[in-house]
Every structure is written in structure tokens, then in C-alpha cells.
Length: 187
Length: 214
Image (cartoon, rainbow over all chains, first blue to last red; front, side):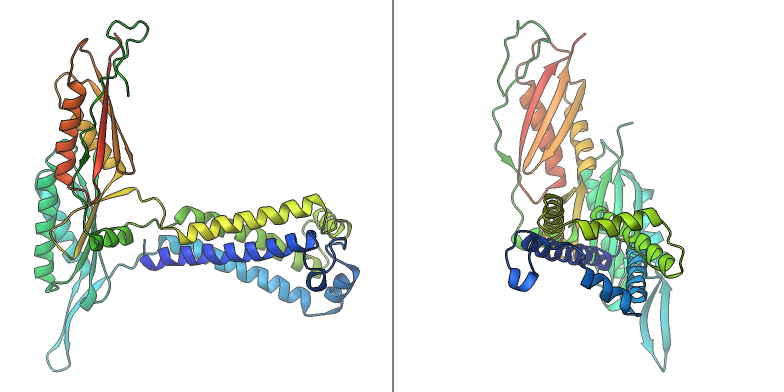
């Protein structure tokens, strides 16, 4: 998942939460007659005749309400869709010189090589790598499954060495890597 | 954990107490811990999906009613009439309204807390020699490896590992009737396996060995 999506999730949840707290607090305050001069009296009905007449008399009211509802539906659907969003890079540009031309490489070439290297040896059953970000600030997300009962220290050392080789290959000494290790179930 | 008598009737549970070996491992430096916390922070996917689905459903129903009513064909005339009646019949100070308002406040507060707190990570951060690498092992993966380490000890048939904050509990089963020190042996095996991962947070390991019922 994209880190942008993770941040968006927290922001979206916070916005909905704050709105709920504000609306609930206002309704609670009115119901408890806490601030009648501003919120009105607690014994009044929820939708007074005045409110209904206003809504029905304004030609724009219901179309705008309907449009707002549709906008919320679309935003909510987009929020659901972006859960599957990935910020994986497809092409890594190494240099761009207008006189000498540009050098680019598919990111999958680098990630496939890393995955093959890791799974070719013992202890590591599966590996999945994703590169993201611009060439100047590449990030590697690596998921590795080690064989339960194997030597974890050796497996982790192999992962570190493979990541170092990837850094050299991409000429990116500061490539940030996040490695997530899981283990197979017992055979 | 206390030791039961070897001649206890019933299930014959022998919980061999282990003197807690103390915390295993050395703590990571604050920068490492912060980087790991940031990298493996909960993404809050489930609350986000729930909120998005609820918002989509309520808004879709509202839009359907509004445009249906404007066109002269309300989608659900009976429901619309009930809602209108509720709006004109209910007063703000009625218990149902106050209860609903309080519930909205509570749900909103929970969502705000979920958004602000980092959440419980299912990843145990481990030490790396590389300052540009953050690594962690999943709870499930670590439990499997540590259970395997417990099973490698002579006399252990089954083992189950539970992870808690700074704590690892191992429950093992042995066919041996009398094996003093077996729990300590299991703890040592598990500690050795844990040391291979070198987690950033020190951990206390507690083991209990139960005799297998034949």
C-alpha cells in the first residue's frame, strides 16, 4: 500500500470523527438545553415548520443537497479504490543529459533480479520487492518469507547483502529499504 | 506460575516454573526505534474501509431519495414519510435524540483516537547493520520460528508461542513424566532463536511445560 494512502486513511478517519463529535456535541448541548441563546431550546422539534418551509421554498436547496450526497458517494468510493493503490515506480531514470541522452531501466528488472537472487539460495522461500519514488530518492519495500527452522541470522544477512548489491547496481547509496520478514508454517 | 505436585490427580498438569531469565536482548537506540515505528505503523485500512462503506451507503440512499422525490417518484415513500414524521414529532430533549447524539460523539471520538494513535503493529522490529534499512519480522513468522526452536528441545512434542508487549510466552507439551529443568531449557532455546533475529526491544521469555495426556 502507498504511504500516501496510509496518511489519507488517518486524515479521512480524523475528519469524519471530528465532524461526528461536533455534530453530536451540538445536538447533545441543544438536547440538554446547555446554550439556548445560540442553539435554541431543547423542547423544540428537530425539524421545525420554519426549516421545512425554507427548504421547500428555495429551489436550489434540494438539488444542492442531492449533489452533495453524490459527491460524498464518489469521495467514499475513491477512498475505497485507493486502498489498492501502489506507488511503485515502473521506470528508473539514471541520468538525463540533453547532449548524451537519457538512461532508464524498468524497475521490474531490478526487483526481479533481487527476488531471484534471494530465492535461489537456501532459507528464503519467497521474496517480493517493490521500488518506489524518484531515482534520486528510491525506496525499496521487500517482503521475504524464510523457511521455519532455517537459520534466521543467515537469511537476514543474505537479505542485507542482496540489498547492498542492489544499491550498488542502482548507484543509489542512500536507497531506503523496508524489509518485512515472515516465516512459512511448519512442514 | 506455580509448580503442581508430580502426583496431582486429574490432568496431571506440571507447570514447571522458570525463574524468569530476565529481559533478553538489548534495546535499540531511539532513532532506530522511531524509524521502525514509522515504517511499520498501522495503515488503519479496516477503519477506513468501514467508514468509507458507511458513508457511501448513507449518501447513496440520501441522493436516491432526494432526486427521486424531486422527480415525483421517491425511492421509498414510506421510509421518507417516517423520517419526516420523526423530524416533526421528536424533540431535541427526548432520550432517543440525546442517546443518538451521545453515540455520535462517542463514535467520533473513537475515530479521532484511531487516527491519532500509531496503533498496534504486528511487526517486531529487528536490528540491522545498515542505517538505510528498517527490518521487522511479522508476529506470525516470529511465533512459528520460536515454536520451532522450542520443538527442537529434547522431550518437547508440541509448542505454542504467544507474543505480548516485551513478553514471549511458550506453552509446551512433553510426554516425559518427570523432567526438571525442561521449561528452562525451552526458554534457552527460544532465547537463542530470538537472538538470531536481534529485536530492537528487549523481551522477557516465560515457558511452561505440560505433560501430555496419553
